[in-house]
Image 1 (cartoon, one colour):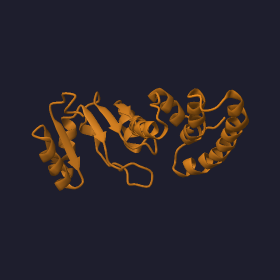
Image 2 (image 1 turned 180 degrees about the vertical axis):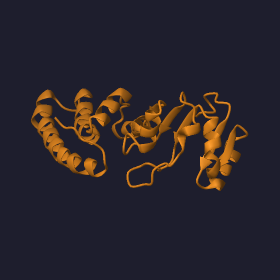
Image 3 (image 1 turned 120 degrees about the vertical axis):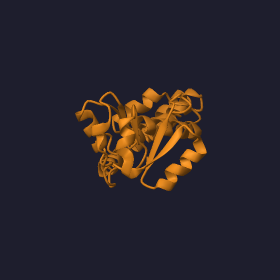
Image 4 (image 1 turned 60 degrees about the vertical axis):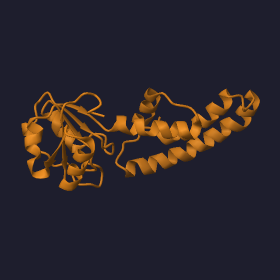
Length: 193
């Protein structure tokens, strides 16, 4: 994606050198593999740092990167979304870098699945609101199918009220209990009204 956007050079640093080299061979001369031990040299030339590993994810080791050679106007993106603010992002923000968390990746990965499952492409802003509220499963699974069925005239208003509304309320109650237990266990804050 970076090459398609016109970025002239992409440095790939991987804990396994052969993977970085293989990616460089696949993508071409603009991709330069860098040994893990020389990551600071690559950071000194970077305008964008993207952590596309599991490092920093809950239950994984931190992404132990020395950001001292990274320009202060460089952007630091971490594709990890659990937790939303990783130690890497916290360190980058503390030194004045612009940071981008993994929430956008999570949302854009979920969108095609939602469309395939429900036959409707949701607005990304709708997904973002649900995810940041800590209730994606609660609303996506509970409310969306009923809203789609109702708007496609699969139910009359009376049928929707008599069957759909109580079923949604029961589902929402069950999912609310689920979300209250599972999401905190994953390290993601949950705020339910």
